[in-house]
Image 1 (tube, rainbow, N blue to C red):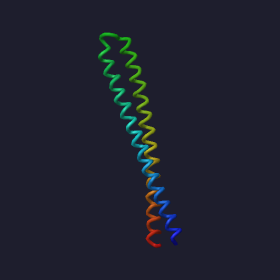
Image 2: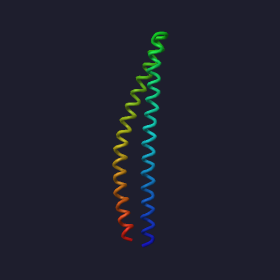
Image 3: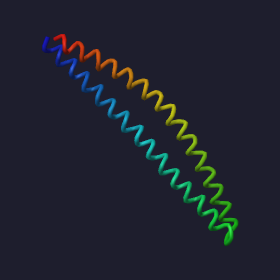
Image 4: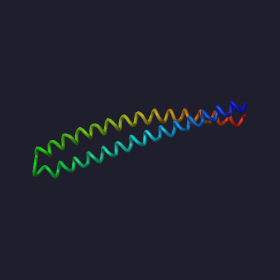
Length: 107
């Protein structure tokens, strides 16, 4: 019985560690999107300040900002899809932890 209890507790710790890692990864993605948004905002502001003095540079900044905005939208879509997968996996893990807890309480 003790071996089974040890094994169940080990599985539970592994599931909890995996949940923490999934949370860390999604947080990292959210932070990356925020950094990209800040960079894009800086570029968009540069467009306005360069419009008067150097229209060519302003166009270049506008193009770069547009490309960056597209990258942000793609990254956000990717993150939404990943979040759905993570939520599904976390729900599955929660069910397994409950099952493990029930089994542990029976031992």
